[in-house]
Image 1 (cartoon, rainbow, N blue to C red):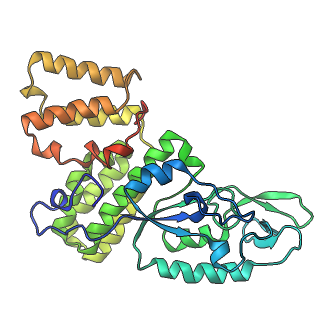
Image 2 (cartoon, one colour; image 1 turned 90 degrees about the vertical axis):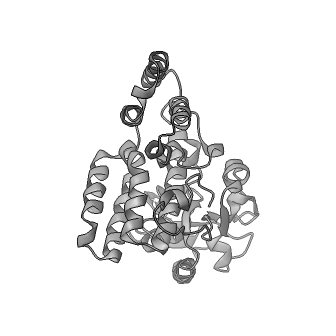
Image 3 (tube, helix red, strand yellow; image 1 turned 180 degrees about the vertical axis):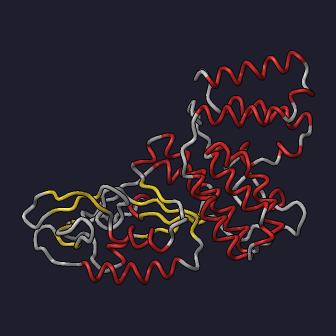
Length: 334
């Protein structure tokens, strides 16, 4: 399992689940450097290929090629209706809507067996764009924006699966959140494959501070749900917990939220520190609070003390290592 949190950490009281569920992400093929765009070119993204690609198994997809439109091909765009657009070629106005929708229905059905943990789509594409894809009138006027036909079909079929466009991944905060959601969803998929109420309690326990860093409301709701787990059938519990868990991770973190979590974590061991060490810890938390150092600095210091003092509850918190350290960004906001 690519994440730093192994199944053994998640399930200390039960049989380990193993790590036979690969972390697979769907991706627009052009982003991997394949020449599948309408003009025969590509849009290779170096971060996805060289960095994230070291930790995931890509499932490359190009809806327009796989639907049989060929490469190169006449450019296409969305037209007629923002809510229910048609997919037409730009010059000849050939309507490929039905063909694309049939392809999308079949391909999405195939994804059921792949257990994708996320998907990176090509921005602005009439098939793959997930937001603000331009929709035109037949006379060329801009009517508004919508979603690519394939991307919309995927989102409808897999509402919990984290998705993002490669263009938005240039933003450090959006990139960090996407990576965190991908690895969080993969851990949930591993658990959900062999879910028991005991395993859910263990999963929730090690995710508490990660949840608190995103949303106090979801943290409380999930806590109540787990506390009353015995009153719910397992599958119903899984549906509710999974939805709330992924909804929580989609909420943006802030410096203030992180400081709150860091103070909670430090509270588990600070009395065991020397006066000098407590002063150092307080200073680092203050520096982060005021934007002088990135989140990785207080997290590393807390992790250091946790290892030295052997504080199991804090040591096992996913918050301290929500994904491989090579993917950690060094922004102040974390």
